[in-house]
Image 1 (cartoon, rainbow over the protein chains, first blue to last red):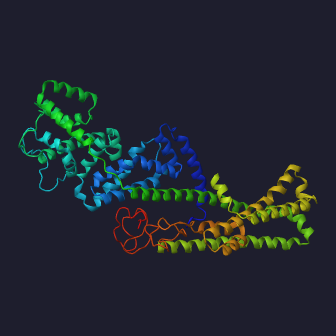
Image 2: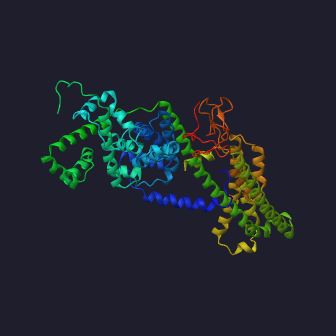
Image 3: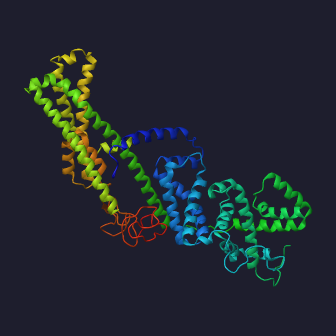
Length: 226
Length: 157
Length: 168
């Protein structure tokens, strides 16, 4: 106990104990395995932390990597997210969705990071040299199909990486995490309508990016689809 | 057609299963009649499926170890602090009780024990008064020590 | 509280013995003193009250001695100057010495995450292998807070993840 005020700690201890008792009365009864782990984490159990870490390690890392696109930064943010989680676990309201909270902590850290290094990279700015919206160069009617067939060549990933950060993270939450729209709204702290608008715009842009990257129409594969 | 444009806007959301019931019905009704929208929707649906199939990057094992240790240390620090507060609360209570109870207790006991041990009454009260003054002095010194340490800590780290 | 019993277990047996002796001494003194001689204050009390008084008041002394024993053992395991702290705990009145100890004590020594040797808790770098044990500024080397964005001493911007001690 460094530097604690001599007389201030006594009422604090009393209030703290009353507060803890109150909070334990308010918490919902744990139902799923996840609920149990979260409850144990709230009590300060380090094993619960390890369990939650292994449960979410891949998903959280993938999400952060989508946003910042750089492995080293994603690793640092990953560590920071969990530290922030451990520090604030006492302030976590158990009635909230834990996953939404976890991802929103990661979201805030990642967006803060991007804002610090390049504030313009977040939103509507298009990568240099490419049209913003509405001009789809003519590549033939099958362009999108051809692009999608090249999945293995990583066209989809490349097109995804080309989108601004806010769209990237939304597409990741919807399709890789398969989160419901209201969960996404909670993670990003925006209204549901914004989520839908951004989702629509994100998919439109993905389509344009894929068409632009589509291999030129040279020959048709056998067994073409229409 | 205005309606057609509106439906085209909804198609990406349809592929993402992001429509509410009313919108879903409107889209389905329109799709029965409009072939171009059907193929557009199919394109979006395939794109959505491709997005779901992107391979998941794996975090390095070293990162997991490091993170786990760091986060566990945070939890342990918090537990330490909570414990420290409880101990401090108890000690304050103890200290105040001892301070406040010293006089009445000594008054109760003094009548006899000290006669029995040969102490003069007045001298005993003097000793107790001295003890109380020493107590308050000690509190003052403690406050000063703490203040000095706080300042030193703040300057170093 | 298992934490409580864990902490209690470090008190040396000698301290327990002294505490018990002091308690018994005090009880005896009170019992054969004012109680026996029926001092006027006590004559009005019921018997239960007198017994409670005799047993309860020396309990404070018992707790006091145990606390001193705890300070002694705890200061020793934290590699502090335990003789000085024990004396402070004994002689500074009203348990203020004990309170001072709890406020000023060093963190527990723990193993270095890299080389495993025990190091005192408030070290920033391991003296054996040099790994950083606490977050530090990459420029001036001072200890920084976990979620700082800039170093408070030299102003360098800290990258994300400066908030955790780096593995070497």
